[in-house]
Length: 545
Image (cartoon, rainbow, N blue to C red):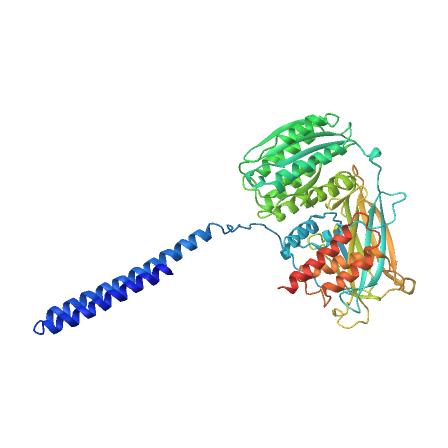
């Protein structure tokens, strides 16, 4: 600014001198008008040139400031995360179709991933929201099985997001087994060490998580490590967990770099697991990756075909997701769903401890496989129903009795919870269909108080033939008052809002918070309290737009 002012003053002085000189010259040389005009034009040209120089200097100064400031601006990051969005299913008229069939799901990845987004100040993509995984992230106080490996529990209460509707809770509890009674484990870690895993919250966090698990394993357990990037290789042959230092050293030496040949790694890991197969043991591959497969088999269809072939070996699968920015949830879910496995997302050491230490039995030791549920609703009491979540777990009604049809697995101590929103008969806006001509749709008097019957089929770990359990839920008003029912309904309501579901009704974030506080009850690990804080953060973000 000072330089510009100084230049301007010099130019003005120059112009004043030129004018004075011109006047003197005119008085002395009245007969030379052409020369006078020429000198005036030169002075004007010099003035305009000076002004132009000032403008150029200003532009250069502004450009220098911009470049200097730009050096301190954060570089934009490219987000290539991928999710599969499944549309909501509407209400089904009971008179038209009284049966609902689906596969059990014990995955928890969606909730941990949603938490990562919200704690980072961002609402999650709607495709990342799977309500059943949110609900099943939490444990519930269901009764332990007495004779079978699993047991059923049901409850009925008011639907918090849609007045006039009811909510049915169905809980399946797998038996808890003492650590000393667990079968020995044949574990193969399949680790993505490609360049995309080179960060503290990916490979760095994974290595710490592995060490926590190894510390919990006993001398009868064995562990091997296969890594894959551009190619796959065995970095640790099957090793007894009494040699923990050998395993720790192999973990410490893991390094990342290169492209990602996930298919080659999967094949190598299954081969190693088959070589050390324990007929009465827990044979399992633990795949740890960000899901960014970019070499070899990469499409969902090809990955699905590969993993379906490999599950016939009797080796189960646990999928652990890591990282952000390029996280491919869609690929990871395919592998877990089709590979007789479960799927968790690890966003911190606390989550690793929950999945691999506190819930090790449920994560690592399958006690019931191909778990399928089928619910028959009484059309005289239920006009319509809708399964909340489980969008990609639906099965055909005929699949329930088909023992060849694959379904979900349950580990020791695991629970599976499902919620149905139902419309009582006689309620307004009940789904309507034309009366059926060839089927009787009213219940007999002997079943007039039965709201529904839920059946479960499952196989024992080495079994080929399924076993059947059945349970009746009666239409009573004294259900739905326990804290587990209330809390599960709060989690479901939050999922409906995050997924922008048209069935979320008018429930507010504050109402969800109040509901969750009522259902918090015993919360030794603080997971329910953390959920409440998560809803509070989402409410603040929603208010700020």
